[in-house]
Image 1 (cartoon, rainbow, N blue to C red):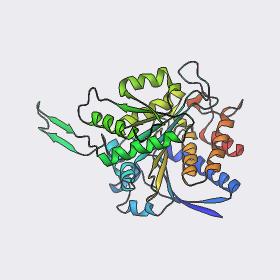
Image 2: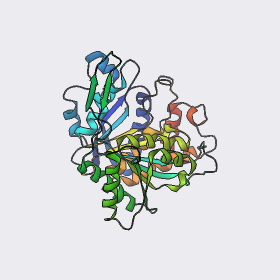
Image 3: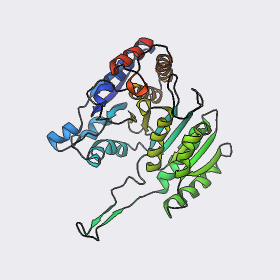
Image 4: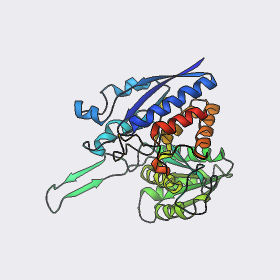
Length: 353
């Protein structure tokens, strides 16, 4: 029997509530498709930080290294500053394992009512490809003159040709795998003087290698507006770390809820494990209530199955999710208009498998 070693990091808040539902789904679909998931649990979180002063142990990266994949729940909770929690766990994993592709689908699922009018399942179906290891998310910079009227804060965005080119080429290659073949660059070259014109130049240069891929570039401000006004017009959107982060929350929001949105942090060369996580974060406002939507975590697990070469199993999971959401009387969590709990919706998806 095929087997996979999966590092499981539930993390904070609702991560601890939605993760068990994803593991139940993985166990069931593995039994159906003839493989086994072996889960190695790591209790690293903001609570760990409060107890030890670290989000994960000093040897945390080495303890993750030999796994086939990492399944993450959420990072961050009140009482620990966000820059501490993210830079102590999530960002080091992404960078140490060179997970330079953040791949995030935006799809209107059955049974969901989007806040934008006139769209049905199938109308909104595109992908955001985000550069995941450099750019605006940098420690370069500093403060001077603290506490005075001349206090100055400098934050440096750093872009390398290597990282820019490889994410653009990934986006072009990914576009070729889709039946619809349009690639949109998120830029802001009319306002950001150095970095975004550079992205425009590299995009134009690399596009010459892909004459079959239709291209367009949009400034981030109007692109956000078009996500709302005409979400059906997009196939693949590629952007820098910050722009991709913003767009990959806005996109699922347009479909009705970020509670169902997944993401993948991918090392395409497979030199290191990739990591899969829902977009919704730790949601401390509803943590502990048992009402979090588990679909974002379950869909992330389905993306993990695709990456591991178990595409049929991943598709099986998504058919189960869609069948439950599209069924009359099926349990729904509050974010999608129902009153069911996390476990109720998870159990319905397991049963649908």
